[in-house]
Length: 137
Length: 136
Image (cartoon, rainbow over all chains, first blue to last red; front, side, top):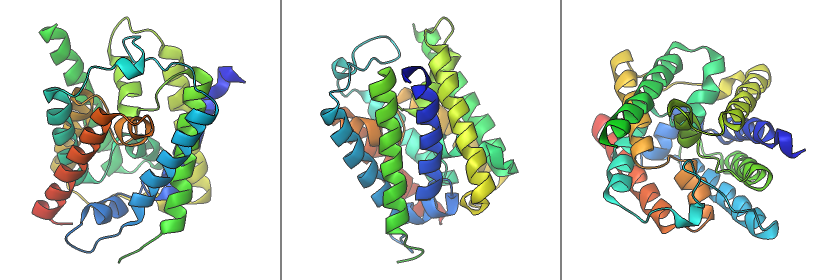
């Protein structure tokens, strides 16, 4: 069972993104358009996701989660300037296109030019970060 | 309120929470999409297998959606240069900030991480300001 948990998680994640409306970039822009024709639906996505995840993590006493560097997640370095600057940059891109990484990747199967271009640029941006952070050491 | 779909969005969100829980409880990993993808870019990184497995699941899920409900895929009609700039900002910014909507917004908040709460408030704010400035 456990062997397949990453695959099952990815599958459920894609279905959740599609059902919730996150793969519809127009809907995402509508949610971000707080001062215009606001569509509040996507607030329910985060609410539902956090409620279920928080409850299941506690109920099943999830094992220690490790991050990319093998550190236990609760010991993640506390808030720093990179978190704020990076999140600000990410938000600008999200607002420009209406895509964040998960929905964009799931939408690749639709073959739409817009999403293919966005994902190519997103991978380039992630690659740029890998090069930049390796140089900084 | 336009195109308001609270029930669908709530159910979809609950599926996302279930997905993140399956990954956390089954494999001890965080369902942060930018981190899962970004980890593939770092040479010598352990754990390629689970990342590729997750992405394969994501693709299969996408194909299921395409078969039963293709209307869920829609772009916002942005031009090529805007999409290219947006993609670079999203890819770079999410890695620099240590997460995106999934890693900080779902997983981090569920672990009651203060850092993720700040990150989520910051990217929500800059995204809303961007839409305000550039127009929906």
